[in-house]
Length: 336
Image (cartoon, rainbow, N blue to C red; front, side, top):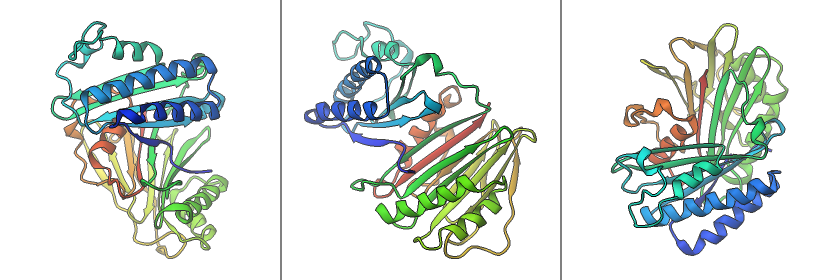
């Protein structure tokens, strides 16, 4: 079933921290994470919530579980709007603290995590990323395109009206971000039927994929959708979209906003559509956002972000641009 990739936990009230820890523990068990790793995950969550309590008035933790081809992992992303850090690298050293504690928190989180990154700016806040794999020996996958999604349901909804799915072959990667009309179960039904059609369609073309999905979801309330593919041999992106899914291609120097067609998949789409292509030499990354994310995104606001995991960038965009009264999605893919 296609649904939110992450669950948002508000971490601004200390009295709820034990509930957050128990819920993340439960979700990790459901995902099939090794018991020993879950114990380490519990310690990471405890350190994250403690830091958010000390340094932030409106902390948030995003938690996602990913199957990873049979080697599942948990991703935790701590987000705050606190004072930030002048020298994040120094704060990673054991014994360094700004609150007269032992100063082992960040260091211990790093040691317990299989992937750990910290991004911070003074006056902006801090993002901490931690991934814990059930089997750390399998954490390194040889991927030609790195893909990082953050999809979060509208607060108060049990299912997401946004949905992300992808398909890999030996020749290409193809991905889809869909936003079902409205919110809740009926919107989720629309994106799941779109995802089912996406998975069975055998061809590469994003435009023809959209046409096939359109015919397949006519009995739903419909969705706005963008489909992006990357051809390994040609080293080119291909993209086609209908409705207000924002797609931006960007590289070391340039960026370009992809223009979608007007319409609603499942109800009315243009008769004439074409795939738009972009070379990976010029644009090595693509970002997709649903309308739960404000589209006036200035990546220059995040200096040195190119050194960090794509999930950190996705979290920074979510932090600054999420409309918390909607389903929210940020998908980033990068050619290695």
